[in-house]
Length: 269
Image (tube, rainbow, N blue to C red):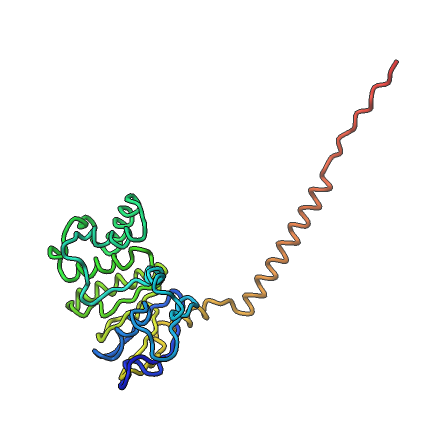
């Protein structure tokens, strides 16, 4: 895939993401991280190559159907993009109203999302009444409003201090552990030793894919958890022994049965 003219923003980029993965996209400003996000929701189209989501070539999606694609891909922005004249609740509800949800569904969803991002009881506040970290958590809740399959977080910690940024990362890890695929672009270093992920590095429009230590560690743990040949044999023998016992018990039960005497019909006098 290529995007851009002259000096390409993305040059010969090719990768795939499996459902449930956490992908870190690292790179300096201008490396092409935001361009990836825009390509994924079809805000822009590649100069060559294809972008596919859930097996569908995005170039085949009509403009009138784009909203259906974008409901499946939630986006978190560095500059939040909340509407200042709306409350926290109203900002989250907007996407749900558009999706045709009823009042009860919307209220339940907002409550659950604010619990998830650790902002209970703040639904009636306005963005200006919140800190930067809290505003970004609202942005995360809004991106999750329609329960998307994929969440693209574009520099979600770029305007935050290190401690607040780490808090946002922990929330994204939790969201990923609940099953949502997460792609996060960043130029910062965060600790991911406690969470499986893959790392993509963007530099001068080129992409390098690096398998993380966490993913390899998870593979080793899974390999270690597999039964040895001896354990397999023992389990087979144990199952055979159990089957023999059940067969013996069945025969004893059969031999213990007592036939009920049949009553002869009375003779007529």
